[in-house]
Amino acid sequence: MRKLKFYFLLPGMMFFAACSKQKEDEVSSVNKEAAIETELSVEHLDKVDLLVTRHRIWRDNKLLKEIIKKDTIPALRSGFQAVPDSSSAAGYRIKEMKDDYEFYITVQ
Image (cartoon, rainbow, N blue to C red):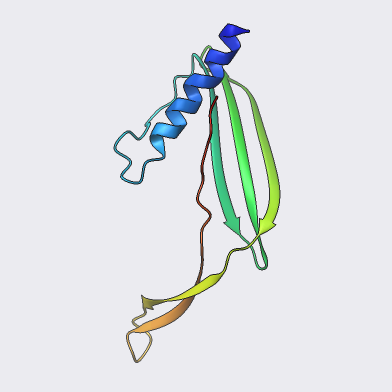
């Protein structure tokens, strides 16, 4: 049981360290000897967002299993932003931008 907790704790700590705003401690590769790699992302759809959670389980440099879970969540408010557009007379156009969720991960 103690060994199992270590396998969850180490990748979680690596994921937490990689999530800093400046990405100073960004992880460039995963130790594929024995690790659980977790990736969270949000895909913006029309009225809802799609939360995608991917878990990759690595052992002996082989991908043992990949678990992908998708859930719909309410979309956050939208805003507008001016983006460069050379085809427009004004040189820019207004584009609708959806707000992004912030991720907070707790590892025990």
